[in-house]
Image (cartoon, rainbow, N blue to C red; front, side, top):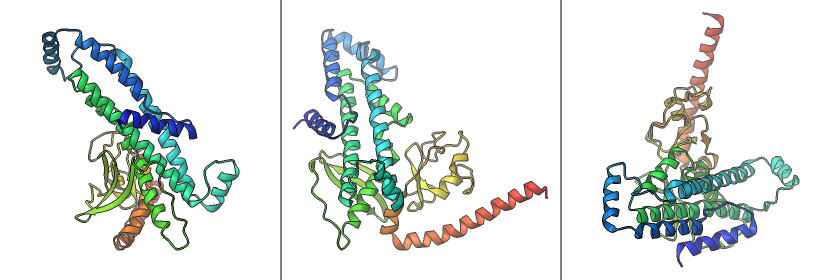
Length: 341
């Protein structure tokens, strides 16, 4: 089955359950077909000259066409914003519900939340959200690849780089990492005595599962898809070069230990990352303004605590001492500043 048909069937099935945004894959393909006809109508020699000329100008589209004049990319950008916005909002709600206290859960359900209240319902909803993120990521990748093939350019790749800088690439979302960890956590807790066995996925060909792997002692959160697409999230902090502890994701998508991120942002643990200057950069990608909207990865923290018990306990003791010392130094400084001593 071609991906376009698979995607349309998937989205149709999801829209029967809930009204959710998606990529207009078929519509965008029609736009590209029209663009292809326009290109074929001109001579090959003129076409090659245009390509050579544009390759000298950062590989832009070889000629003016309706696609590049504001039809294709603006429409795809809006659809991507809608998809990422819906995904982030619903993933955050689900994870907040899962991590909430018993009283807050009861209050949420009493207010009319239509989520299933049992363990199996949480697993299925988390699984559906991960499926949604990954299949839309594939759709976006394929339509951009098709754009570049028709135009013999790299505009599609340039657009992808641009949206990554704008932080609307769904695979960069910290909530995807959290959902993957959430799915593994619930799956593991389901193995406990007396737990209800999960029903098979309603879309098994699309989603094979998430797993936490260790490659030469380095942790890796991995998610595989049936069409050879694989998402790997490195869980090694690039600052301390160890497994992330109390992990936090910056808005650029890179994951660090909380204390390491505070050090990189030149802020104290007491003040937190929200007080970081907008000019502070991510240590890896050098993007600015990535600290204020950082997300604590609580589900990932639970997963790593379960999987690396000895390391986690040793690191917890070490960080407890460091945080207490940092808090003491902070308040000593504040007292001296206030008293003028």
